[in-house]
Image (cartoon, rainbow, N blue to C red; front, side, top):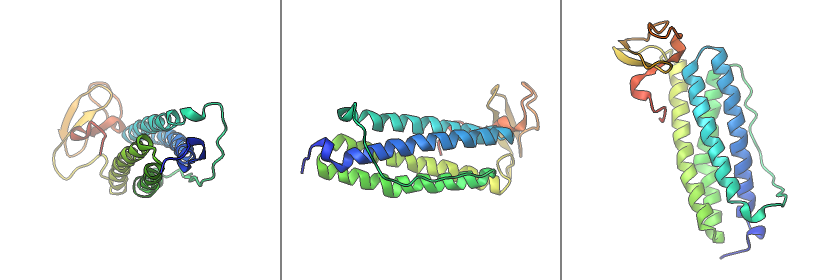
Length: 198
């Protein structure tokens, strides 16, 4: 069943997705600032990377609203207020929010778009749902490490990469300060995680 875009649920869902991704970008930017304040540069970089990806998702959804240019779209929706000074809480809530998008929200939006005949929107919702799943996995991994004091320690010798200068250190934990650029330990990441993906 194909219906006119202006009368579709897909149009409203695209605006909801645009709003949600825009808000996620800001929440993650705020969380990155907290991580920086706590000298957890790696966590800050993870939040910033994800914020940049959320901005791209918002733009993709917004571009799919081109047929409504010049109009105002009124939507209803619920959006989380994740305020905390505890980085593990922010990581855990990010896992929850990303999982909800990946497993519930975007698959439902994709099904509606497919039913209404908007195949491109259906495909985009499905693809971004898969990306949000990787976001949840990445945030979950960092949350677990922070909770277990494992972000900067390992049970065996590990290669650690300084994100500032690229120095590689081998040991159970990175040095307190990079011997090359003199940046603090918060700039180190396990060398096999350099893609920050998941």
